[in-house]
Picture 1 (cartoon, rainbow, N blue to C red):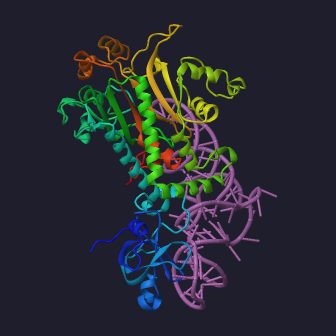
Picture 2 (picture 1 turned 180 degrees about the horizontal axis):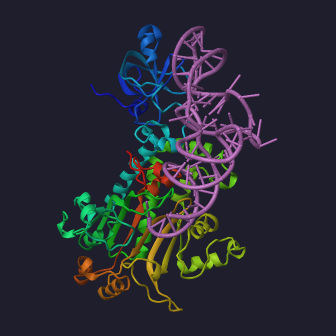
Picture 3 (picture 1 turned 90 degrees about the vertical axis):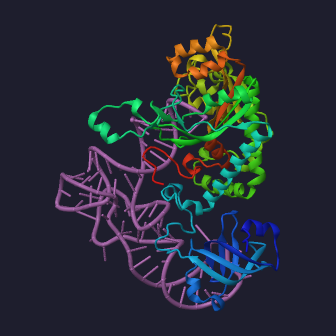
Length: 478
RNA sequence: UCCUCAGUAGCUCAGCUGGUUAGAGCACAUGACUGUUAAUCAUGGGGUCCCUGGUUCGAGCCCAGGCUGAGGAGCCA
């Protein structure tokens, strides 16, 4: 017999049908009303039990967290909190849950506490909502690209390339480290792959290779950075989406990034309404404890709708610097870091542009060549002879950079010059250079941090709360 | 890695200028009630005050070092 999920029961409302619900107890109210969750929705099913029929000993075992199977007839609820309920006929406790040991209670827990119980935090309303939304967003990404004729490319997790310079890498080896500690000698040629290998920091270079044959591709997989960064926006293991499109220039790239973000948010608004409403209420309650300045300027759903229904602001780096230089904020010397053409903009500068000046997502293009990666396409020098590249960053309120991308340098000799400037030996990325030698073409792409997207959509403020098992310095317990 | 803040009951927190037996709410146990919505009411049990060392007649409180967590910065997605 197939068991309907609670989500299905609320949807179909099969009054008078006899059904079995399997799930986990949230509370037992009044020795009569059992609230059961099965993860299919944030809502719980009310199971009406009674002491006479099921026995006092059984009711005592209906502790928060216990797993149960309840069979009974679906009825319109007499109570006010739900439209249907199940009048329980037979009740089976599948797994007991000792309340003296079980750490999750029907009360508010801090997110920090739940992070230490990562194996059990799925059972809370907040994390249930977050991870249901995470699923829907992953699905939305695939649907967006698939519907536009992109191919999903599986870039390698283990890479022999160390050219991208996106950050510190995790070494991958099966050499005997104890032996190496004794001899003090590492011989890469004796390693599994016969050379030094690392966990990938980006699938971009590989995606470019594929785009120059398949046309439109995207990667969506885990990436790894061994940076010792301890912030609410960084992980050592995170998921990234990297589309790469042949014949796209920087403007096509901006259009794609904006459309992708809007599509994902719209998809969540349509498919995760109840979870988003719950998270909005949660955020509003949390905000009440905060100083007025730290609160969100508008509720979650309003913020998301605002993004979907407005065009992103598009400005050049040079214009952005001018805005900063002409701001009262700058004149009153409120920026901690200096502002001048050529700087790598600090968080405070980006936040000012996005949250104060424009109050909506901003796409900044044309960054100084000196502060961007080697593979970005050189623009013609500006009137003042300054070198910029066809890079673009999409910044959103509250998160900062959610997308970073560029038109790629497709000119063979220009790219070789860049390699020389960046001290990248050509024999390390000969395969990348060859794509420019054999039928090169204009192409562009970007990287979008999946967890940052989820943060933006859910309103969660710590990245460790939007990935099931966060990997951060000194933390890999689960 | 740097700066700032925090660590007290299972959880969330209070604890005065260093002073005698360390508190509250929730959770848990027992009982009452029985159409509740994190049910309610009464009663009860529950503490390595993060660790190590120091100052002091006396340390949850002061000092030093360490550990852990959070916020911010850098780096980035």
